[in-house]
Image (cartoon, rainbow, N blue to C red; front, side, top):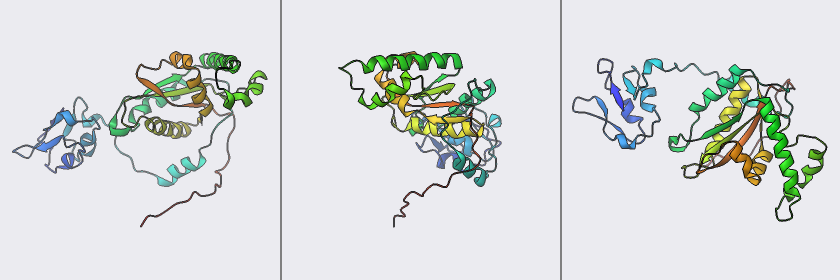
Length: 265
């Protein structure tokens, strides 16, 4: 599980201190080792914290890890301030390079107890997305005719859909759904955390995003489309998001009213 380069190890014990499930201990020579490997949650804190790069976790050599760069708080804050929900997109696929970067980023998304079992289903081709949106709209209209199904919350969208307006998917060229295991420790919050990270990284790439609440409700109403998105057995839909190249450009940050902030004493 862990391998220690004894020539590099300075016996500082940081890997032991930062191991939340107490997997690592010192041996009789004060060299760290995995005393309780069954407790490991694969968080790799031990790999990340070692000051000399003496610890290899499984096949992950510290020499292959990216270095941690200096943070620029004002730029990060500006990214947060300038994030907008995008409802107008260019009718085109995003560049393949950006799509790859978005998918590669997902492996660093945090989950409760590092329960690394989220599944992300992408519609990454505009033609597939157009077919998907057309079928969802058509099936929703059919469902509204069924007196045995409660579609009251969607009734106000019937007229716009019949008029050809894409009120559900907002003309977005791409869509991502996050599926979460039913037995995950934080099954309800992990997908929200995941899409929050996804959204900010997408914004940094010059892409627009929108939380797709209507899509979330409708996909649960029309489970046949969850099957098309290849939902795994034992999983449920966590949430979904639209994304693509924005057709609008915002020129400045907004000036929102503050939330209530309480300092507990």
